[in-house]
Length: 455
Ligand code: PLP
Image (cartoon, rainbow, N blue to C red; front, top):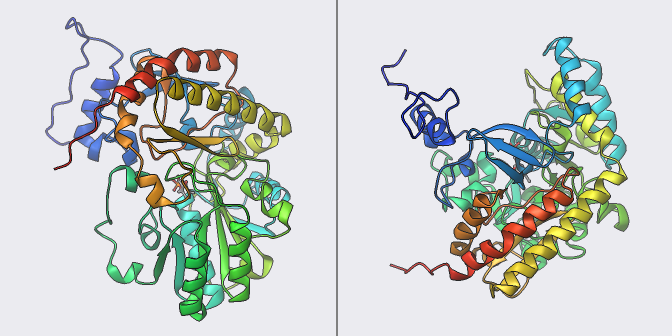
């Protein structure tokens, strides 16, 4: 045991408090975890202050260690489509856990979850993994193994998990913390990564004209949600699919965030299904795990056939297809019917109107962008944001005071201007009233935010 003093949980009046506060948990966490967190954006670095340590979630609401109740617009960064602690998901998970938590053999729920994913999307087969990062990492390896090529094209501002080769100009926490690049990623690992501006067809054409025979794949978020929400321009994903096909490369559509969230078949339901094209590989996570660590990659049968044990491309996982995680995901997907998507869309639309109205009344220039029910605000801009450069041109300094005013009024937004706001089917009229009450003051705080002086 290390010799640090574990802080005694005390309340303001000095009495021993059986339930430590968020601040006390954070103090303890800072001793044993870098930054006090297990994923960087949770540390509140972009907004300042103390992260709230949650002790409970129910429907659209979270309760922190101090007993404060918040309307949740993080949704665990996407998974909680049905809201927290949905009774049927909880019951299914409890039953599954009662039968054993991991076998290291195949088990029925993983087959049923794979069937559900195959039924909803254009993929022929899926391999289950435990995180979105693992899904994109494995899809990348498979694309390289299948094509026998090394180069990968990604778009600036898109985040595909913390895969070494894909961290170049990534969104999400990488941009929130302003990290230009990540030490620990050897230059040779990213030497085969080409980073292009999002939504830029000419740049894609130029890259293929120069490097075509060496490009294994293009990986893109089906709709970018990690530089704020930046949807693909109409036809852009189809253009990527066709360009890849004509050069013998594969298109990997990363639907870790959008999958089973923006429609029952993900963002593909908004473009590919209507336009008549399919990605060669897709990655999934978040909603399909029902709040548990489950993710997947899948695609064309001939590509998936290259995966071990059928083919030579190796990929494996001790907890892949875990029976409790797959039960949570399966139950969530089975409950995610059209009514759920209608309710999520409708609440999201109402919330978007409230945000726009409050910011406009306070005189804050902004653009609110959507991909299905996912949305985010770009601060201080007046034109639609179509790429990472546009996202970075926003006045992020307006976000911190806005965020804290919302938090003080009981609405927990993602603690970064570059993250998307997530809604669940449990967000109801009470949740909308909480938003409506919180927004005017927060909008005034954003309007009054002083511009930082440049040094
Ligand atoms: N891909 C996308 C589009 C994501 O948004 C994320 C995470 O936010 C990932 C991949 C990585 O997923 P995970 O955090 O489960 O590793």
